[in-house]
Image (cartoon, rainbow, N blue to C red; front, side, top):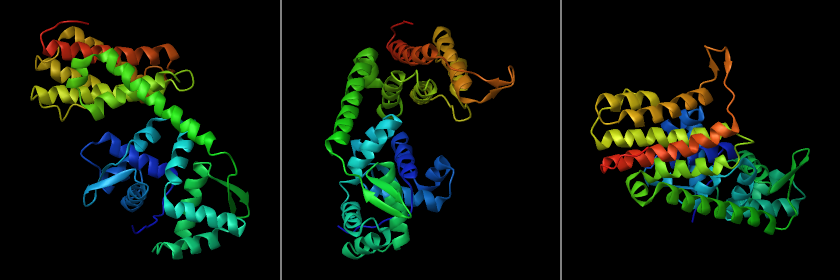
Length: 321
């Protein structure tokens, strides 16, 4: 197959993949440029490089969707594990393997390695773009080590080390998947959107285990799940919700349409206010940003699961809180 290299960074490739995971219908350069806060040209390069690495594929010209579970593992893993996952992905990519091998032979001279990689694989990209992209991806993945003076050498270690991390990430994700499905129950899992609700709940559950180190991450993912669920609920009842932004506004809109019971609305309002405290920076009432405790972070995830389960049950005329 023909190969091509695009000028981008590891962070942008991961973020472009993450954006596609959040939008099951696919993303384009305009959406990803807003997601990354960059230009459409840089966003497109990130999307195209993610496609090269088999993280994304085009469902139609210019529309990118996830291509493999590695992208899910990469985007939902904790920061310390992302490098191992990206390393596994990179070292399946033939031009990068060539670049890495030529670096070892040249004593770390990136220009020489890039020229040879470009020639061997008939790559159109300028050698400086190959150098910039591969050294950024390689150092992020801890596959390359900067020696200073523009020299880079392959890391000399046992591949088993990063493969063990990769295996642990996969096991953690699959274990979390099974646990969250059990907590929600079969009827809830069958009803909710798999990408926008279930996957976010699973990621939130995983992040809750690390809440001591990052108490906001579980709230971000569980909050996204709840807001997406409310959108799904509104679509189910054909309640217009386009002008309702955020969890609280969506809950109010559904309640006014008599599609959300008061007990459930106030459970959701709790989540909405905690999410706002975690997300919205300085609060004018206190003149500072709210600190989020580990306990609140973990409870947020469980309440999100409970209220979603309760509302799905209510659709079937079972009333629970």
